Image 1 (tube, rainbow, N blue to C red):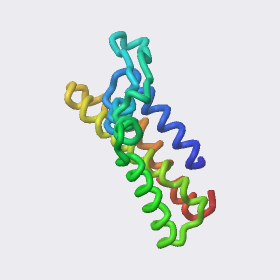
Image 2 (cartoon, rainbow, N blue to C red):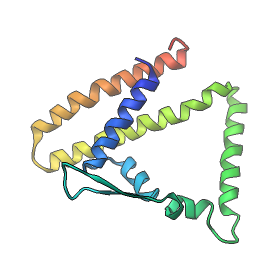
Image 3 (cartoon, helix red, strand yellow):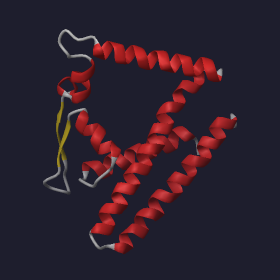
Image 4 (cartoon, rainbow, N blue to C red):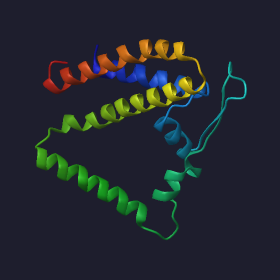
Length: 154
């Protein structure tokens, strides 16, 4: 299976778990800082309450600081670092898409760790085996797909 397919499967699984109120590690923190509100009071029908990126922490730090150039300097610094890294490693421009894939893998593993911590704290050890049976094949396939992608045989 291709890396992009596994990336979309893992993101969909993580977002589904987050919408139903389960802890998802870094993904929950990112959605909270983007000001994405989810009402989980009824676990069978979670409701997306608000998505206001202009009121989010990231937007305020980068773009809405009145009279400050801090946000523009941060963006310029990140762009300069990306260009410098590509020049040093002699990377092709197609390899710039690797960062979202690697971040997705990290978010997937973070969600797995948070979910396992939550399930074990609830005293339901057998559910951790079921979750591992779901997450482990996806993670292993993701790692193998990334290896194929890096070798160019994807």
